[in-house]
Length: 82
Image (cartoon, rainbow, N blue to C red; front, side, top):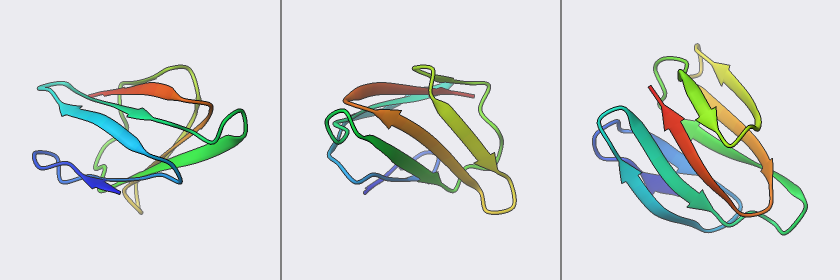
């Protein structure tokens, strides 16, 4: 788990989270994944739906729970843009 200082988000993953960077309009990080098996990255504390999430992955946003879920397989560099 990692906490972002500026946005006050928490990133939860069943794998290592590395290279976390907060920029003015985006957040980037690397999730090591579970090999080729799918896994979900949960980002809590998100107050609005992001403009874009890359790479192309299944993304769900729950406004009431302030939860963003990114489903992916394998190691990925993730960018979430405001």
